[in-house]
Image (cartoon, rainbow over all chains, first blue to last red; front, side, top):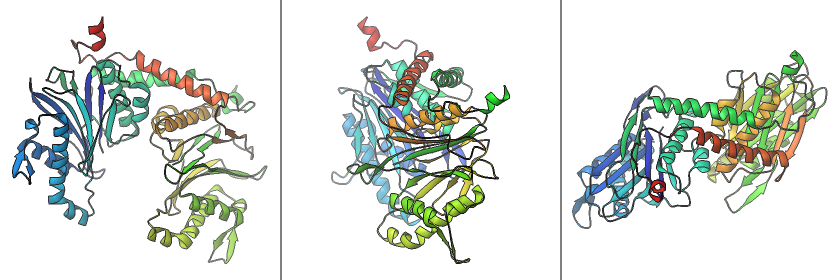
Length: 256
Length: 256
């Protein structure tokens, strides 16, 4: 499994991805799923992937080497795109190119051709944007109303984002929310695990503000996990008990 | 969609279920999914269901009218079971009986025969127990190590239970945790909604301690939702910001 999320607020973009892959529970490995394409001053792009690893790695390789454009008889690399919309289209084209080669045979072998990507970043001359691209190569864009997108094992970490993330929050708060969301996912699903890759991009800098790997034992994330657990326990304790149960003799009471 | 959970602690059993059903987003209705079978002094059973409504309703009807036992040439009702294990077996047999009649035709029509049940309660002479029964009629039992089971849209509400629920907690706390878990699910999935049915059974009483429907606007649950949101916001705010971003010029800072 995989969990990746992207948060796009006024102050910038956060992308995080775990690194755990599994082909069955007895075959667990660490693979980078957050890929950074960066030429400072020209473009900075983060591409996070979920789904079949052979497909997602091929897509990343094609984006480096060039995706075929049959009509024009050309190949296009991600670095040549002039807008984020064109970059999202190119990722979609790369997925379709892999599908043309492998899709039918994978399906015959009952292997799902099931991938999704988050593409975020900025290309000189345009704004910072964030897209989610599906298996068929179609995509949606993140907007201010719901300033985050998730791929992979997204449900465990969604309640935290639903409550906390707004377009006006500061970038450090957006990163904090993303890490809490990752923590919730890791606690409930063993298929998502450390290390975690993090990319932060602030508007109009055209370089990565932060491109960082959180390894097991990293002090801040360890502390965040402990504090969040303690704060949730305190939040839980602060809520009054249901009044529906009036005279229940509980085990604790009978011991008194 | 559906969300139901059962919590079995030393002090008793809590079962909760939402009531929203949908056949497409444009066909949303309210149906009871938590069914209570009770003869005070003899047995008290709660049966919560998720999945195809035509199947789950047929299973409930069979448990009232009698499930066929082909080998013995008899029919058995849930009220006749002498142990909770036999009751779980009977629910499994009822699912298989519905599958024999409808399974093949449903599959031909591309309708999933996909159901699951939680069965909890106590029968005179035995302990309070909780089971989860799958589409094939097989089942697992809740144990002290993980004293809860969930069916339906379970992922959103699992992190809350993973952190809060332990076998030694009091029954009122178990009910509170269940309701917080339901709130998290309702916030992130429109397919789960009010009213919520609640059953509480304490050991060796052989009657329902509480069989209650939480309607929209019910004061305690409304207050719980408000308080939990506020407490989560406070918990979020109490966590220090990531130290990875040192000199980012944020929008908020540039406004100063």
